[in-house]
Length: 69
Image (cartoon, rainbow, N blue to C red; front, side, top):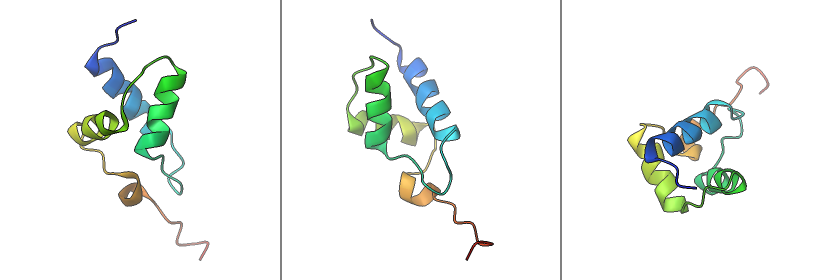
């Protein structure tokens, strides 16, 4: 089944929106989640789509809870 680029971008956005902020999901993990849904895509394509959505890479999205430390 062919799926549009915009639908894949929406799925990536939803995956990232629902991630645990202390442990952000890597592009490879996003790729694996999409693959489990039947969407075959390369990690580099995930990164390209994430960049086009103006979403930072995982290591820059990490939020540390300062109150715990």
